Length: 460
Image 1 (cartoon, rainbow, N blue to C red):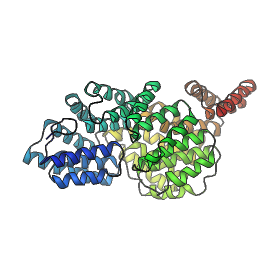
Image 2 (cartoon, rainbow, N blue to C red; image 1 turned 90 degrees about the horizontal axis):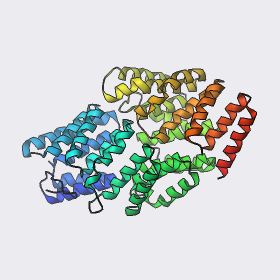
Image 3 (cartoon, rainbow, N blue to C red; image 1 turned 90 degrees about the vertical axis):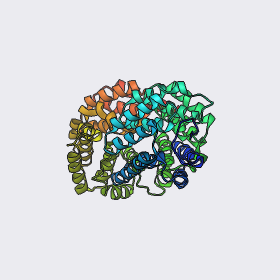
Image 4 (cartoon, helix red, strand yellow; image 1 turned 60 degrees about the vertical axis):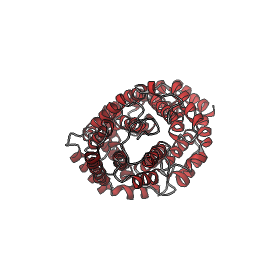
């Protein structure tokens, strides 16, 4: 059988393949019908190799260690089917990718996916999953070039081309090619307003360029589509809240937090990352967040042994420490150390960056600010290893800067903020703190200029 992009697919009937196409289309748009479409696929063909493989991929995407066994079960079902009815080389390589991923070998998994793409550049499933893994490996160059390597096979006549532009937009943004990223993202949204990954990519460009008011308007334009997508919609509400925070509109941030970001108190990992990072930013600005940490800390207490990826782990640590769960913080640190003894992808990352970050967070909430600087400053250039975007990881750079002030290390604060002002010249948060550092070092003229810059930017 041939799928929507002309790729040979092993299946019992055409209806299974059409439902599989729908599954991928729903997945690409963060659709709430993704799971139902996959169930229909397997109802049409209970032995479809790629359908079982995708089921396994979806289990891994939840980033819950307890679901790894289910992913392996889906892999076993796919392998049985491949052995009994046969499978294409492309499908067998997907099984290898799922096998590696479920063993925690991210580099091996993405290598298999890239091999698929070399021979089958229109495999949009392999392209999207490689995009995800490059992202969480912190590999911005391959995030960008993975898309570039397949563009020769895509144009407007190929089903899903708009989604490829959306992937390209985000990859370009993370690589610092902001103008090109915005062009690709807007083109993708024009073709398909439901492509929320492309909406997200343009929002990232605006965040990186401190285009706060434009960012608010951009996300508000997509508000009708957010109600039609899965939990990823909460992440776009996070971006909207971040723009409002940069505008110092705290009331809107708290309203978005309560009514959008945490409306259903989800325990999905990205939702917790959104919430914890926003609460920390609010508190750093002197905002009383009330008892909002409590429900996050309660959910994270059950996840002290979760180490599917380092990125969510350090956010769980943030919730535990902020929520005053001291015993859980110690359990989490011990568990992180034990996990870091292995050689799988995230175990190595945990050893290199995750444990220092976890320690820095614990020190912060113990009031040990000098220790935050001592632990975090030497690893700040390793932070991309944990994955996530520049905007998400900026939380930890802000933590380091806040700790320099709290520990009275004003020269270090000045150095970091001078660096940051060169990189983000339109960011009021940066200039306000730069003014504080300069004032503490008796540079009154420089402090006054920095304060004026902050006010001008904020009113722009």
